[in-house]
Amino acid sequence: MRPHRTTPAPRRCPLRALAGAATALALSLALPATAARAEETVAPDTVVGEIVQAWPEAGPAGSTAEAGHAEAPLTWVETATGEAVRVPTGAVAGLAVGSTVELTVGDAVPDAAGQEGFVPARDVLAAELLQEAPERRAARVAGLTNQVTVAMAVPAGGQRDGATLAQLVAAVDGPVADFWAGETDGAVRLGVTEAHDWVQTTAGCADPTAMWNEVADRTGFEPAPGRHLVVYVSSLPRDLPGCSYALGQVGTGVAAGGRVYVRDALPSVIAHELGHNFGLGHSSGHQCDGAVETGACRTAPYRDYYDVMGASWSSLGSLNAPQAAQLGVLPASAQLPVAAAGPATTVTLAPLADRAGTRAVRLTDAAGSTYWLELRAAVGRDAWLAAAGNRFGLDSGVLLRRTGRMPDTALLLDGTPSPAGRWDDDLRAALPVGVPVPVAGGAFTVTVDAVTSAGAALTVVPAAGAVVPVSPLPEGGSAPELLAAEPVTAEPVTAAATAAAAAPAGAAATVPVAPEVLAVAAPETPAAQVAAGALLIEPVPAAVRTTSGAGWVTPAAAGAGLAALALTGWTVARKRVARGRDRALPPVPGPTCR
Image (cartoon, rainbow, N blue to C red; front, side, top):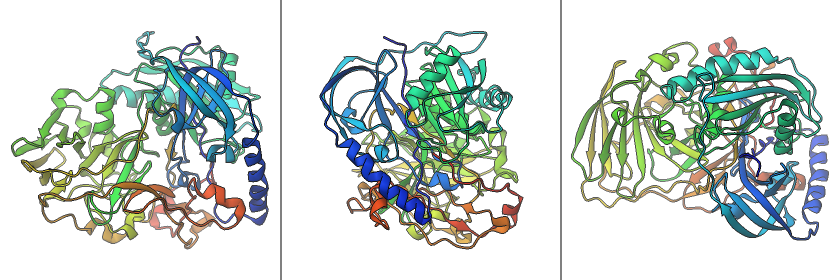
């Protein structure tokens, strides 16, 4: 069998708000054709190969492209000959990425990805696990734990842009390599071992596996543990069908290797996609209506601007505690565990970026849910928090996170929660000083006693004997084979009142937490245009998972041709009035394909 390959899920191309009548007509004509193709009767086939998944990424945070988020990865079975058969992700939810399976597949089945131009998925009639995903051990070459082959590619239908191979190599060997070496204390040392200039592929983004395989054949890349193929896909035209802003194969650990493509040489997006190769999901935000984690809540993909696995932008902050723990690079000496049945604990928390001392408090409730407290101070890799580059106005202070499931493996909770009506403008998340905050439905009460640039004093009081109703996380599954990155290009206008939003006044013994369901946020009426004609697009996903008691909620789409696309989420393009600091930012690029 061919060496391990994981198949990336192409990024979703967001529906453009206020599209012209001609575009709407084209969509309405194209969708029935796709549906007809999916309804064709196909004789059952037997397919043997590896389970491969990928997540399509949105554009940089702040761009119109970032608004649409895939709610599930794309999944393929890739055979030993490199052929790929796409299947519904839910049909193989119990099979791990990288495992070898035998599937019996039937007719094509309609789904959102097919409507966006991907090859239709085949119905899974039967499945058999032939071999578990093998453990990957990378061979070290010239002091590197992870070898990177980079290549420039123009996919079918594309044209070469102005990016250069030297720019791509410099990004990988410079800030990307420095980031992963620093955040893993040297456990990951990556570098470019081969570089290949522009190649033209006959495959397009609609079949990313074929495109990757074609580039691999042209460059001589052979998949193996610890080996990565990073392909820069030309950004022209921006709306090339099936093209995501970036796409990364999801691996099983830092030694798994994998494939990536990006349409931007931004270091943060390349580092993000390699994080997927290492097995990480997204760092997302979890917001509740005037509370830290109770009542009506939503999980907003990518909405953690502190972290590389959240939205991609110019700053690369420290890898957050739950993601570092998942990689196995947060040593026990850096963690203070606190159990639900333990005594009250006081701790002085060192800044996460210090790389020394107690840098994380790990809270585990009676149900096994894990929460993390970490201090973000403007030191080391997080020095940008006190600089002009902190254009989102992110807080220094103690942050509260929760370990999640794929695709959101780390969830940033809001320590100063806003009402639901102000969620979109609220990026202030640090816990307030001197205010007791209930965590895990009251299993713990956390008080930040003091915060300085050198450390934070915390008191954690478990609620002994409490029966804690733990907030259910969004439905997860096995790791997807491919994931995409979300870039940030402009800052949202944050409400002045956000910073003063009240945190819970005290700790209730037991606080019921609502179950989480999926919902879609309705688009907001566009506001004023900014100077020079550029639009500042708020980095708020259109489709978010919301906890309420309601079932599925989908917005009404204008026109029958758009109705099918509405189920996958809307692109919310929120025009914002530029403030003084906005004018210093470069113009926001046009919509990019996620």
